[in-house]
Length: 431
Image (cartoon, rainbow, N blue to C red; front, side, top):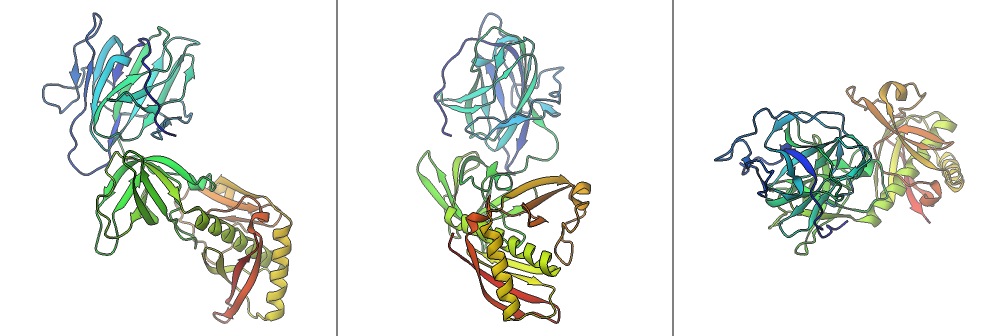
């Protein structure tokens, strides 16, 4: 979604108090807030640490319990759950927050909590940049109560609050610096494997090394970071503001973040706060989705018909291999497995993704098909992939929605990898 033009609206009474998470290691300039002078306006105040100003006395952290509705903001901001943190500034009650401007440092995400005290009146939060373009728009909420929006890092500059609606209502608007860890990258691939592109904000850029290009951290991404035998995605980052683009050669998990590795030798990399479009190499991703689902179908058939556990596996777009706990394997057995897998794929079985509490997941018989349980003990939720009527496993990769989409497979080879360890290689056909 592209930013829309800002449209001025009537005044909405409220109190501004400001939640901000530094996402870079550099010294960022401070925040300042200044209402447009009016008969009811309080004196301007500045964020703590800014010369000539201090945080408002008596200011407190934003209350928890805000709405969790997603935001429609082009920046990727979403309604959060509230939180505690350091209040940066406050403007006295009665100041129209549409007329309140503020200076934001780069690479600092923040939260806005609005406590509406008028029943039945819709409200939302918008932020416009100095040109008047909307850079953030939160969901509209009707009625009294609190809602908290998570706003991604903005480019350094001047901004103004606004509201899409304009009734004369009262309430408190709070913006504050969160305590604790910065938010993790929103990894959309785990819940929507078919989303090919998304707009995102750069949270951090880490320098290149001798063997890798710069690493870009975004507030959200459609890239799969690799794992479980499935390679990471590739694609492109595009900055619409000037048409600059960067090739992403790989992605990987790094703590709570997904880092996007640019090509070595890349110069003029994206800057923290930049707004980018994240585009997958869709043909490659879709081939990996088909391959991954085909391997699960193979695993399901081998487990159901022969009771053999998986001892290893790997894949590339359009081809993969799995190792099973077989003592013997010959051409007749391999042909039989191939025919059965193709028959199951042709049924057109739905493929479902679920996330279950760990205790509930481990109550499912045979959920872990690998010889060794590779799930870390600290994981509280388990993601499962079910090929309805054939296979149900713990899995973190991307898959097609129905086995019809896979097409068929051909066993391209088989070999012994040990006394009771046999490898089957497959390739996709058709589809």
